[in-house]
Length: 205
Image (cartoon, rainbow, N blue to C red):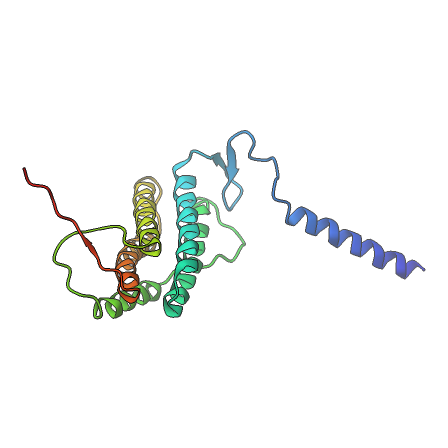
């Protein structure tokens, strides 16, 4: 009987723990602050929060782009990109002045090399660009261009953050290469779906 009670109590404790772990609302941020990895409380308007929040926004857009694509290989690459963006978010969310016992994921130069190889592969199949092009032509192409712009914004925020609190150099480098990849992917997506680039024709008075 005692053993049965212990089992029931343990089961109850596990359920309680799970409820606490997966509760969406905590109310701890109601006054406009949040905690970094390491426990430091900062304003939600802090540049660090803006930086990794924008990376999260980018990740969401990448997910949308992935869902819109038919090309299996490109979808697999974007899945990898989403994983790396989660890594960047974790890196940016860490308090640089505090050590944590948590094992955080990391970013490698090889992740940048992957993007460069993909850019080169797609570029070999694309027609030469003879003018600036306008975003558009199809919904997938347009959405990838939006993701590219969000990526550029994330990069700018990370560079601003780096000026006051050093960021691992591989982070802005990855975001820079990712924006290049997204630009080429937009063109490549148009190519495989039969949608031509829209050239910018500047009006000259």
